Image 1 (spheres, helix red, strand yellow):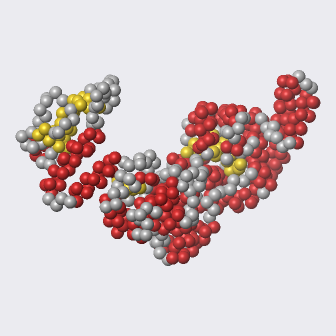
Image 2: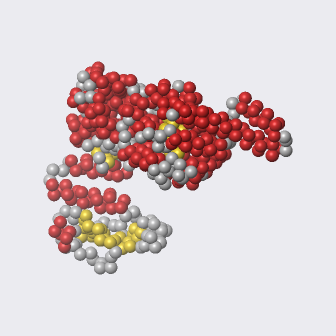
Image 3: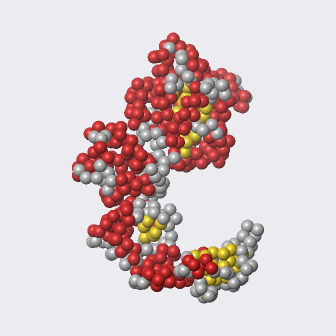
Length: 558
């Protein structure tokens, strides 16, 4: 168990991406830095599918391009590191994830890491690699000089002087053509050395594209040439996997060069990470860690409902930073258990949010702001059980039921009913009570919740079961039916006419005849004649006959 705690204490939620020059100068240090992340990486199915497809394509001798996109916190670099290590394990020269700021970074990173691999496998091929690198670096300079000389009508030697001045200013002169040619030769050298292929993991592509700057369109076109060029080498085991944020980078490429996004998706090697993590991820990851590092005691360090709450939170991009938040919570679980020797609860989770031990980075802190506001309300302030009930509600944005709430369920009901919070601060969802403020599209006062709240108050005051059913039938007609079939007002050509007090048949079934449609008349929303009936007697409802045979829809509610 101590091994798990040590691993969590030492784990950094952020994987720092190396620079291209580090792959050239200190490849052993890069490998030492990255490998622990690859070994402890928890593989979800979506990542496994990309892994299998990428390795299969390269081993079959085919070129492949793809990308990993996600917002902050979803583990783009960690996923790239895992894929890098899996490619290495499958005898593929995989260039570790590096900062992609310029085209020359790809050339330098590839040359540096391939040299490292060849030094162990085929050192006799190193001179060829160095020669190719010098050749295509010089070719880029020569190509640009010829272009300047042609456009400006000046001698080539003068154009070369201008280009070398750019080099002195550390500007990137690498062209897509020279980079593609170098990658082609590098792949051939890798295959000659006995490897199955070569794949480049270029991370933080937003640094290259700089979508907010004036030259972004040109950069996207350059990237398009690179992707199409690699795809054009159909029978060469060369791969390029880009790492990028969804916004603004993926969105900008999609808008300006959607064809290359399609090319990278169609082979099954594109992955949108933030769409891949579901509610079961925290529970599955904790079980994986306990099995890998811990023992039976480690499973008792956190309540199962806490992992359920974390699942509800981490699937929401406006409440968490995805897997990064999950890892931060896991570190708190370890620290909490070592200090208190009791399981970590949903209340502990909310306390850590309030105390700043868990921080939601990058956007408005909706969860903590809602908690601070509600905990200061008169009905809650100074009342510990109600404070805990509010924290529990905040821990389950999709809803908390009686099983999850335990003894606090009656306190939540009191807040909903006695304090009239239902409809204002509390809502009822399919999974239980939840806070209005934490809903993705929260209404200030959900109308349906207010109807339910008022009905519940009347319901609990009646003891006779038959009277309860009658109360429900009347409430349905007065409150719910107008919401299902909105009343038509004067001058409207849509909604429904015929609303009045219900008629009753010989068996006591209450009914209404309505006519209309939900939107302006069209072939999609034709005018309909509707009969809606309600009864507390199922036999009577079965025998009920609408007074008009010419109806389109017959709804019966028991």
